[in-house]
Image (cartoon, rainbow, N blue to C red; front, side):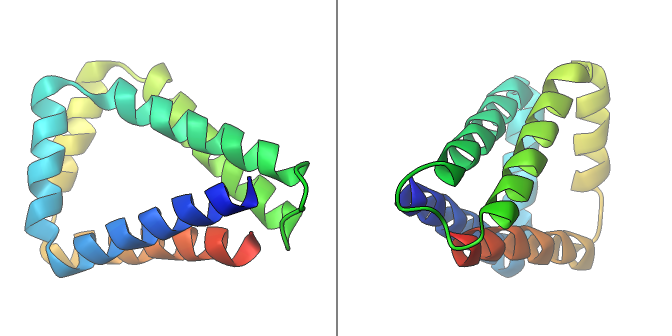
Length: 124
């Protein structure tokens, strides 16, 4: 399970690098998700990620920092549940808001995503 957490963290870091290098590509992905209303798939992936992180806490071998992995799992679960709790119209509005933000804003968000992924790799 610890290896799976590290793989997820690495994939998130790669995603962050893509956002940093090409915020326009991130906008295109957001527009695609908004157009096809795929918010629930993202929410499901986040919930699965959180559950995997929670399962990794009690797995053998244990992660280096179970508290950190637990907190990251909690953030993943909460954000996944948020996507199920909010109406599609509101999520479309949030996506539209993000699409219209300048590149520096999306890059700053990419840095935060990269920190989350880096913490997952470090904590596992």
